[in-house]
Every structure is written in C-alpha cells, then in structure tokens.
Length: 317
Length: 265
Image (cartoon, rainbow over all chains, first blue to last red; front, side, top):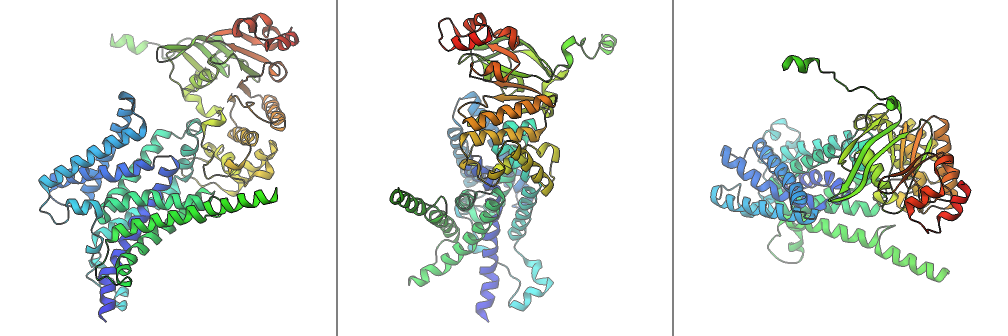
C-alpha cells in the first residue's frame, strides 16, 4: 500500500523529529521562562550557528558530536560575553543578550556563506527553518516492518540524536529538579543551602545549548525559539505547580510538533491549494496558537474567565 | 625563604570572641564611591535576639548582605562560630526582604517551606513524603497549616512573611539574619514572628533582625546594634537604647524617638 509506505518513510520520521525537537527545547525552557531569561533561549538558538560552522570548518564533516561541542563552546563564549557586556559596558541584560546573539548569528551566517554553502546539509535556508520535510526513514515499507530489527538500522541520525538529547533533558530535570527550582525562586537561599546559583545557572545554559544545537540541526532556529518559550508559557497559564507545569509543557510541545506537521501537510489541501506549507513554521504557529488559547481560556489566569469573574463580582456587590 | 614559609603558622592567633555566632571586624562597604558602612565592629552574643536599628540609608540591609557576602566587602572580616562566614553558610539562615523573590513562581506555601530542607535532603535526592510532613509542621508553627496548598502569590503580605519564617525554621540554622520581617505585616503575623523569635532563642539560636519600629524594639529584642553609616551603639538593650544614642543616630528633633526613649530611660 503506497499510502502506508509514504507515511512510514516520510511523515513518521518527520513527526517524530518535530515532537522530539519540541520536547528537548520545551523541557529546559520551563526554567528559562521562570528565570525571566526567555530571551536566553533565543540567544542560544542563534549562537549555536557560528559554533556549528566552526565545527564544520575544523572537521569538514557534520557529525553530531563535533557540532554539539562547537555549539557548546559558542554558547559558553556567548554567556561570558553577555555577562561581560553587563559588567563592563553597563548594559541591561536584555540589551546585552540582543547585542551578543545577533552579532554572533550574523558572523555565523557570513562564515557559512564563505565555507559551507556548497554542502546540502548546511546552508542559510536550513539554518532558519530546518529540513523537517527532508527527514527520510528508508526502512519500513509496511506496518509489519516496524517489528523487524533491521528496519531500525536505517533510522535517520538526527532522530537518534534528538531521542538521546530529549532523554538526557528528562533525566537532568529529574535529578536536579530541587536545585533548579530553588536557585530560580530564591538564589540567596540556595547559596545558604550550599547550592551554587552560578553553577546551576551555567548547567542550565549548557542544557539549553545542547537542546538548541540538537533541535537546530533538524528543524532550524524558528522552531527552537518557539519551543523554548511557548509550551512552558502555555503550561504556566494552566497550573500553579512546577512539576505539573513541566509535564504540561511536554504535552503541549508534543502536540505542537505533531499537530504543526499535520497542519502543514493537510491544511492547504483542505483549503483547496495544491502546495504544502513549511512544517517547521507551522509547528511554531501551532505552539503560538496554543499560547493564545491558554491566555484566553485558562481556568484561573485566562482573560475570558477573569473578565467573567469580574462581571460576577460587580453584580454580586 | 622556602623553609621560612614552611614554618609559618597556618592561622593567626584566635581572638577571645572567636566562638561567637557572629564576629564582625572593621567591615567597610561602599556603593561605587559612596561609603555606606565604615569600619563596623560587632560581636553577637550567643542565644540572643539582636535588633539592627537605624535611620533610612543607615546601611542596615547592607550590613546583613555584606555579612553574608551577598554584597562585596571593601574591607573587614566576618567570622561565624570562629571560622570565615563563607565556610559557615550552612549554619546561617537568611530571611530576605519579601520583595526579593518572584511571588508568581509556581510553588505552594508548602513547597517553599520544603525548600528550607533541601540542604538536609542533599543534591539529586528527591523530596519524600516525610520531608513534606516535616515542612507541614513548620507551617503549623507559624499558624499557616491551612494555607499549605495555596500558591504563594495568593497569600497576603503577612502570610508570605510567615512562610519565609517557617522556611527559616526548616533550615535549622544556628544563626539567623532577617531583613525587616516586621515590615508591613498584620497584627497576627507580628505575634507569630515574635513567637518564632522566642522559640529560636529558647533553642539557643542567635537572631539578628533589621527592625524599623523603635517603639517595639526594646520589647522584642535584648541586644542592640544601632547603625548610622557606622556603629552608634552596640550592647544590651537595657543599657544602650538611650535617648542620646538615638538622637545621635537619627539626628536631633525626630519626634519618633520621644516615647521610645522615655520607655528605655
């Protein structure tokens, strides 16, 4: 059945990559949003580009490990530069981040044009919105093949990388949940308890950088930025418990990943247009739409509910 | 030269006040070029309640922060139970001003009190039911048992302050530094805070408390540190809370010092 084969070969790997990329970013994104450092996710997703290009220039290959290392180094340089600009230049944090990540991203783009433009896997277009549609699994031809071990030998490498990174994010959040929570809520108390705010903060930045580079490679910087911020912010509207917020953000990230891809493929057909939409863009749009819905309809913080409750209060008094 | 270095004593002679919960020597702090505190010397007595009093801008909060190392020190030494304060942070409980944290944080009153136990629980270990039960008892001690599940932003200012106090109790420190716990709280909270202070004292803990209200200072505290950019008076409340000292710190003609000074006299 050709429909099944297309789904298993083209749609399934792309959906999995979109969902995993969204999860890998949304999980650490929770703490970025709570630390009022949402812009840091934006910054990280941009500064990984010069890191990746540098790794490519040095090794001549796009293997995952050098790229992650290159991105990590670039992220650390960015964190140092942002801190330095605040101390030496007296810039406020937002301005310092804005200056550093735009300058580093632009430098990365210029370098990319010069060095790697000929390589199909590394060009300016992919840096922005990735290559979700180009993720192919040349293994299973029917549902039955999913049970056969050899089908999995041809799994796309970025799918494996993203699965590993997502798992690592889950593990790290589980292990350091207390430390991340207390340094975010009250750094002064954390220091008193022997939990260094600086170290945990740097650890979080490293997690963000790893998530950014893994997702960036597959889906481009647009999804990365949206996924760091949108699912956690949506989840925050719906709960007052930190653990619940993290699980909800994971749910919304997965929904945005799968739903965005499906919309990109089917929405134009439903509207009678023969073209399909850019999948990475649609994933980000879906995440944004969920955020809007939550802002309107959330049970406690939603605009509609609050307006209705205020109306009730007025009539009651 | 090398041999000389070898025989250099590792530590200087230990002064007599070495075992005091808090000994500050020559502490100087400046914001930029502006000196805020100048060569402050202070030794806190064991198991005592100390009021840190002074006019606005006297450097009371700065003193607390500089002691903890949250504010850089220009000069001076701070020791806690005979060792540099940086190495004794586990023995110190800090209750910051209420405005210092984000009350929109997704945490319940119980979650915040449980954070006081994180040092005891240890890195990477999960919070268990018995930890939460323990935290619940500390909440009960400040009269907040009914609000355990409430998100912290939905509590009143006084209730938030009591959550902070319960968290300080959970920390089980030996020295407490509190930055204006009485600021803008209701009468019930004020009583709860006084109860907590007395409990801490009876357990042999020392508490330094930035305090604004000169009327209540002699009732709530036994020891005084009166600051105005420098130490104006330091010692037992009964002998040091005098009209002359207050006039020196606040300037002459401040009507506030009238009744308080009368009571102290």
